[in-house]
Length: 152
Ligand SMILES: [Zn+2]
Image 1: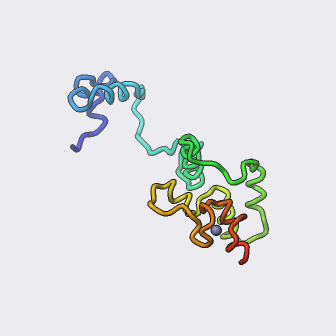
Image 2: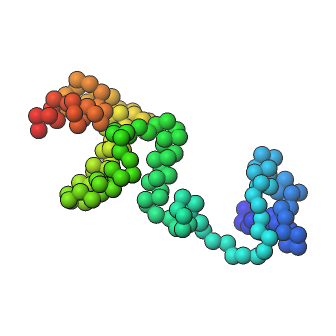
Image 3: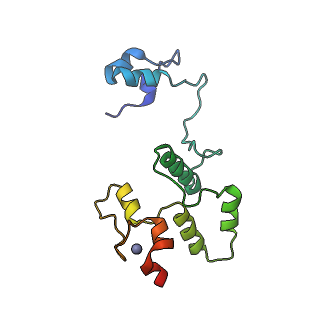
């Protein structure tokens, strides 16, 4: 296509060129575009990551976004719901190797690929624990209930 946004903005009035938008986009997209306010003065474009107050992308803010979107979709439930921001700081300040901190954080956020998590990600696997075959492999089963894991 090779079009630029500027080609849809009147160079003299600084408003959207509605007729041109209508030639390229369906009505619902045109309505959404018309809702985007245009700058009154000429400023250079720049990339901004809206999830961070400084506008700069970071993995931390991306993780927060991923968790929030997962929560909104109803697919996220923390392993321990009592952990608040202060609790997380204590986890990060524990005197243990960094990779264990990361693993603990992942477990508490249910990121390791248990059968339950894989099924949630639409992977076609059997839900039973592959070690004991006695119950669905959830994070709770793996870390608290599985007789094979307990014997380790
Ligand atoms: Zn098991």
